[in-house]
Figure 1 (cartoon, rainbow, N blue to C red):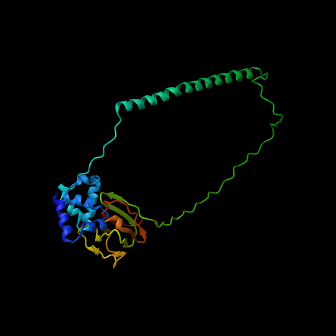
Figure 2: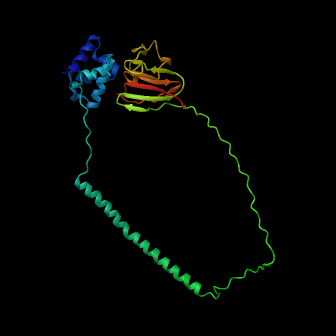
Length: 290
């Protein structure tokens, strides 16, 4: 049993929660919860899911996951590197031989087409020279067109008409107001960052689901900023969570479980939420509209 598993078990028992209740809240199978409490990570489906299960379990107990990870870093399962596929020498030689075989099959065909083209060109030049040799006309005699020209007549020259320049009126481009969902600007581990170009203050609506249970906290800019909404709101009394005209350029929305959030709307536009179990912090930055 690890110190992390012992801490989680003691915290659960102190909260009066059973394994079945944790399973119902987090949707994690009870055998995986027992494995986390006993530090038996080999019974979990991989190190990535093990860390995700620990995060969800800790959030259901109202714990700060960042602080928990820092305190019990040595007890966390290590992320296993994914094996990279490498071709054997035989496979590499086989692919090279196959490519060489394809090239060798096409070379005779290309050479045959090239020789045929050269022969056709040579025949065309021979036929053309024979046709010119049979003509009786002398190259020094100019062909008569049947039209006589009086040398004494002066042909008036036509002056080109001057075209008036056309002035193009400048077209004023009207600012286009962005609509539609707001895409993720930056992803960094458990953090998602969005940017919205507006001159107005940020008004945010956070719609949460009844199940699975989660918590939501909204702060000004960072972990140390003042709360703009209750950290653990009672969903039956406050849903959606609304922050109107926030006097800050950056909101930090901390969520316990991304699956527990239905949608987040900022200044009338919905955020494109990434369905990732590791998402924990959502930053919304206001930038000046150009």
